[in-house]
Image (cartoon, rainbow, N blue to C red; front, side, top):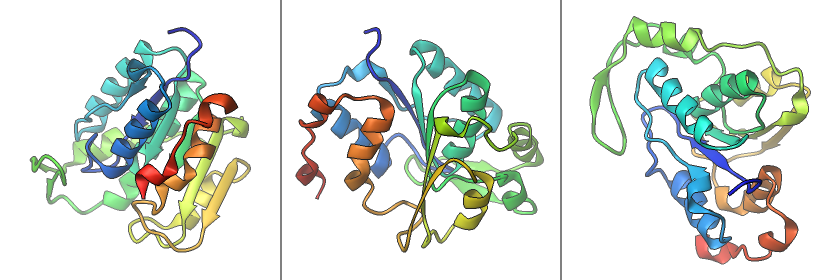
Length: 206
């Protein structure tokens, strides 16, 4: 469906397409009557190279999708948005995650699938290869941060995306509390028209 809004949602580290935010977004998307095939939520491999290849394939399926990335997914989204000149909405995005993981080569477990895997130097090299300069065409980026993020220092993202549309909410957590309450802004950023947005029933997410 040409010219219909399209989105690639990018989940975070050890997360899944079954995560709460991903499922709430899918529910709202269908509630608005948007084409199901225009929302892609890939189940990402734990290795950055494999994950980015999956995301590249998803982007190729759609026409100029908006990227919505959470945590490590925000880091991936930043790289891909710069590469493909796409819009990106980032939720508590990771900044330079290869520095955060340095020295923690421990067994990991996906919170949803139960898959166990080993974090290695190869993962860090893969992440480092995706580091890009802060966005210059800042109007393409919207960043949502919550100061209560217990996993990432929100100030790092606030500094890195300086000049972009950065919104800091006091409190909250890394999962980004009250995500569904922000759907009107999210869908407006994606390009959903005002008449379609009237169908949105936020009470369904209470």
